Length: 255
Image 1 (cartoon, rainbow, N blue to C red):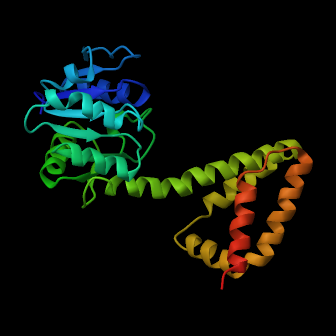
Image 2: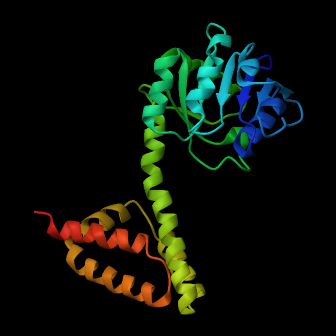
Image 3: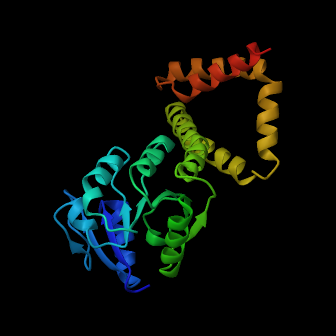
């Protein structure tokens, strides 16, 4: 696939690394970003439309806000059969809108941070069958890690966002807890405790978390109310603690 012509729209942290790896893998890469110059080996273009006019594959890696405008500004210049792959973390409705506006659209969910992985970042993809198959074949040949999720555009990103509720929620809880521990003078202790808890997670942990939360909602709601009181006393803003308390109260009141 050394003759694959790829247009990369958006050459920031993610797009820049992916573009560099594509060049290293032998692809013919052109790119556009109004704010970031292209990496070495990437032919500079003057606009989204200019970048896509002779491409076999377009990687839209700009932002969720720019996903639809990038496609709209490029439609008149897309060649028949060109694959439009949207790598932005946008809502499923945005991915579906892209598929309504163009053919050969592939929804690409990047399932890990791109820095340090570049083209090897695990990709979960969905969309039009032919486009998905061609995308997987072309990118896998260049060294990408691609998994096909059956279903239309929106299916792949839906799974990433559902996972994000856990991962980002967990990260937010850790940040808030450590801020409180720092204020209380025991940050190192809590870091070690959190690390030990996370290291002990296994396939049974989810069941214990879900069933235990429901079974002991009333007691745990009282516990989180006390935790919230402590954070207020420490001068730490409450966000995750308040949300956890509200969820537990709602489970307590559920029929």
